[in-house]
Length: 164
Image (cartoon, rainbow, N blue to C red; front, side, top):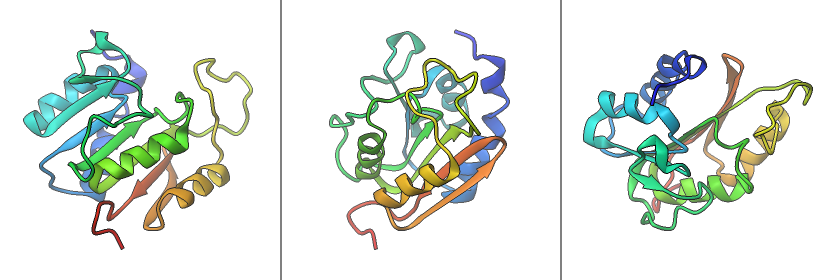
């Protein structure tokens, strides 16, 4: 399965986010990995695990992004979701589950839209910087939210049982 060109351009950005906000890690779970999982697996090898609702992308795990119950609490260093939060039925639940599974860092992005005009029909939600920040603040206090490359980026730090 080939990776769409519009997703390929984000690879250096997303890899840079991981390097900036977490650095070295032993385990990374990518929720909603899609076709990019092939590229991430080449980059990070056995440290990487892909999770997607579609079996056809070759993910390690198949299921609903809002239900990560198959993963133990604090079982992964990094948990990511690149452009997934706008597609799920319960974004708050998805982020809570990602935080539960992570013992370190959670990173997620969404496209930034000024309005719903010409909106992607698969997007159940559209986020503004204000609503995105409000959601992130409800999930975890040790966070950073910013805009870059037409994306809203959320980073939750110090997740896990020993969180501050």
